[in-house]
Length: 132
Length: 350
Image (cartoon, rainbow over all chains, first blue to last red):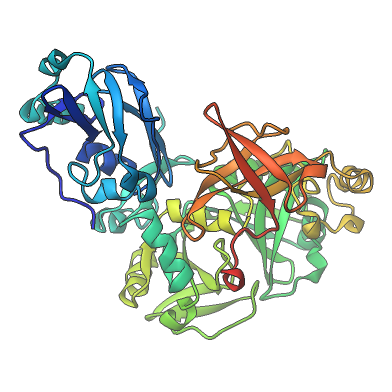
């Protein structure tokens, strides 16, 4: 079942429709409800290698639906500690639960202070509204 | 900025919550609930597609049969009223101006249903060549076309079975239409040609019978699984019928436009052939991706039935045989693929 639209208050958001759940020096990353809805049912997650370096605002992975492929942009810089194998095996997990079981990677942050520059949920919702 | 055209079913699509996208100048539903669910509905039961964006041309007059025989690749002489035929409109080089279905309505009176994006070029092509005793008309705006496809399509519509590529007047839920036993999914089914005014009512009658509304997304994955070429992707005025594997719809003896060129290609053997392939590794092939061994992907997608990437592409002829190994360049990543016999998907093998 596709998830209902939501943007949890405890996450930080990147304008390219990515979220980060920051926990000290680490963060879990994923794509927002808006991103998965725009793509449709995901059928492939081209994951980074564990140990790969993420650079804020640069693509670090790809997600694909039947009709389209999209880069996944890193909201923060860091090193990949873990890739969500459940999503690699069953990409539709992202559609079902984009902020929970559908997380993409866990990273060790290069600079936890970067998170301050990301949007909170209200600002991201405003960003979506402005995009029309 | 050109305004997008809307079919007579536009309001129905909006009411159903379809996701509408521009396609060949039309605003068309790409999906309703989701491409994969719609695809599976057609493979297991029945789905309905609005394909009213396709063009309808009539060819009338004492010389109609002779004229069509000269411009279309298949043998029009094999038609009689009530029979339809898949065929190609070819150019002097043997290239494919369009692929279409021709219906013999009565002696010297034909209907041709053409791809949406080729409606105007086809009409112009035929008008430029029509002899004095033939008249070609574009009647597309008078009609809507609803494809109902799947193993339970006929049962759900209450229509009698009939051989493929036949057609007859009929009705569904009291709405009169022409029932064509044709389709683009590899499944049993019909395409219902209906007046534009009655289209929305027919659509409602079809859906009331438990047929799932399907968008162009599923239409594309369904046709790709069974290797039906898409004009503009897999075939074009620059590609010939022999290389495309469409020699079976070319009656070379009829002397149609480009037949001599095609005969030479057939006798010499084409340099490239349109091959079907399945990904052996993760990754989804897409149109335009290079094939490392030569050529490029002309159509590619995720197959909902095989649950892996599939595609079509022109490859060097010696690599077009089943089991040949190919390498697809998926945005810089080299991913292995294997050539398979067409169709990629068939019910018997799954």
